[in-house]
Image 1: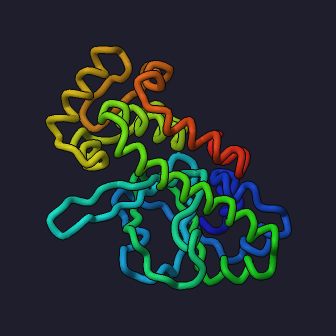
Image 2: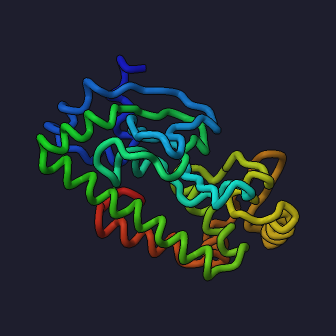
Length: 242
């Protein structure tokens, strides 16, 4: 894929915002990879040596374990608007969360050390990634507030909307069990919520697939967390989400 890598840069909105000079600095160090859902990009506790840029409909997620007796909880999503690994911190510090592919697709990889070198060489490059760091941290803050304040139905609607916005598709490949894991609730609870959304005409489902049939209705059923985050990030780094 590397011979045609330039064709994929525009499929990641963060890379698409690079100035020509910064793009030329970065291009020789990039490689493209087709990764399947579940592939671990960044294990918790290990040094962050690689940075990944999801392209197109690909999505990665951050997962955290509260303790050894708990299932992992998803705390953030990263799609074509951003990157995973070596974004917020500088240097090879251990990763706190595990990052893995949530929706399969194309990912562009670069060594984190290369990013750090280019940040030193280019102020515009450094500022771009600093602004994206703000957007990523804002998502984590908003998710904490959302989990503490909003119902599971609202959070379900928010997650479906946010995922569709990142993939650019109203068709999401996901089981109800996976959705329950993402939300940190029981599968039977999610099944009741999904049934209610189907009856309200908001979604259609079949084995392993959710189809969003009424996005305005889902937004009305959702909390405002996704909208608040999108508005903030559009102010900080215009065009990343919208």
